[in-house]
Image 1: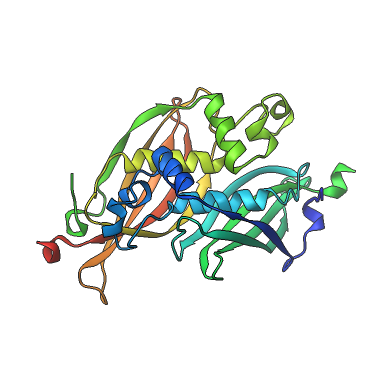
Image 2 (image 1 turned 90 degrees about the vertical axis):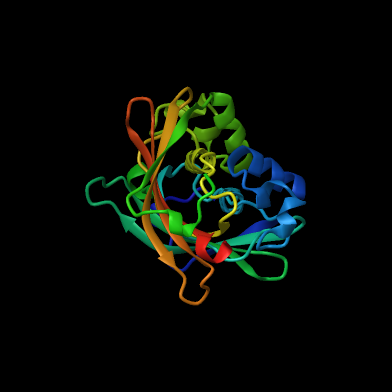
Length: 150
Length: 150
């Protein structure tokens, strides 16, 4: 793709591939980053509010962004990501679920102080195989401008 | 600790232990969740805006929350986390950095519709060994109330 800041339009959408998440992956992530019992222990999780093992919300978030980064929209333009906003964990991600994600361009803004770059704001939404929305979030990305590079 | 919603006070602070992050861990995380070149390839990363390998911001976020969850403040009270706000990646996390994190209680709010629970809002800040603030974020946590449980 190899896009620069100037190549994005507000309202553009990008669809990811889908991936299926196993109980083993959920537990491995939980062990490393979020060892709360309903992410870690399938038996203990039966008595949680969710009635069984669910992925850490951070796992769902990281998978969402992995699906997005795999679109490889801006391999040369990316400088950094300064932040995220409004992460909502709407429904749990359960073992065996197949998820896909969509990104929409919410804003494209050239920097006033640094004319070679600017910020893109993306909205991310992730669904499971039942078309339930499970996560939404917004992310900022600092991208180089095409005009200045060429 | 075993705290419930009613056991938290606005302004309370909780300090984490510290951890040191290796290049291998940074690359392993990037391979799984954020394969952008400056998180994945130490040589290619030399030409990035950061001049070398840095951890994915999602890695810094997950480590921050791991340090927080290891405080084990509410093993019985936690129901779920509905979301996060205002994640800012302020400085990069580099190989060999030692980070620690602090959580502050920003808000404690009983639910009106469900009297057995409520929401705690936490502010998270993470520093490196040079006392540079590298990440800040806010997180919501739904907790059970002690009064109703006992």
